[in-house]
Length: 441
Image 1 (cartoon, rainbow, N blue to C red):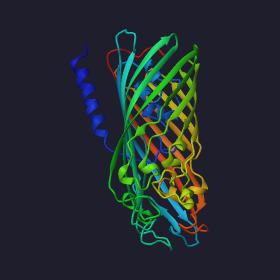
Image 2: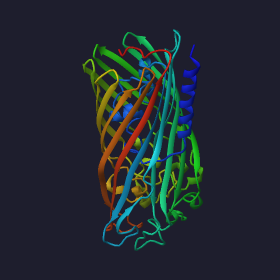
Image 3: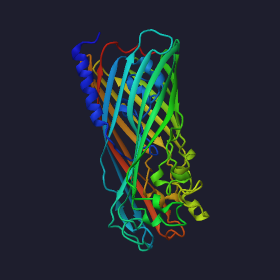
Image 4: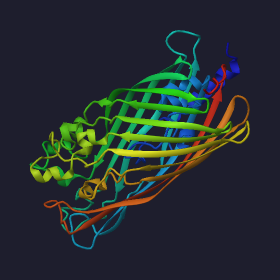
């Protein structure tokens, strides 16, 4: 039976997390997805599909929950994406010179809790997790205006920007089905929220199927559902394999913006898969190598080329223009050194292919997700048997993509170079109660 003080501590931590779980938005680091979830996974560059050691496994590979004890983990990331574009000297629809996006700091929460069940045929561990999956934000001033623009602002409609938020809630179950082999499943409830402004130049008959559903419509919320599942297998005493993935998260359409997004406002969250290997080169040192694939190219509102508008396909149509994003492939490496019973050091790196090509830079002023390299590090310090504190840091160096404006919607000789770099600091706390962690493999 849990002691009263332990229950109070757990409840207090839950209250803090609920307070942190307010709406947020950010330009994430792998397309519009985060590079990792929770302080440990983020410090390892997002690697770890084959090496789960706490309750945050529910958001990466739920099969790894079999190695988690009774615990509550909470973290919040201070994320700073720096977005800008630079217009060439030739006159165009968009401005010349450098224009920076405002609103450079965002809070991204992460919460997970796991509980070991009495012996039964169905599950060894159950967990709940709430986390920011991804998002996108830009906020450009109205003061910038192109030579051929119909009014102030990047696209002639005043301040330009998008605020997309994606948060996922799931309950996960994990079971050891054979020595060294575990499986897990986690149904997902998703909440998306979006708001767009400054797109008045595109809210015109012939350009949109519904000019009244393109811009300045305020916030709209969409709910969706999907499933994440995973497998973890200890192929040798010091070598483990893991694979996990989620279905597309089928979501309600953004009806307020049905005249903007292809397929009348459809905006599902794409499927993804991650596979990895973990090798204990020493009892206290583990190396990780993971591969991730995200199917951005399967979502028409994201993947349709912006040039579709030149073929007579208006915004919001089934084959209407999108952002032209390709699928994203990611390689992740990480290392964890458990230097002492109290201190663990972590480092990681990941490389992601860019989803954006030169063809689509004009539309992607709204969503300049071009960073590719992610350098991470962090630590965990055990204060006592129950409490630990964690930290993770990220630096994503500046990357850019350059192209011209679309014919008929600007001057192809007017170049646009979209750029971004990022910083992030994640602070976490972990509380263990009751059952200890299961021995790792």
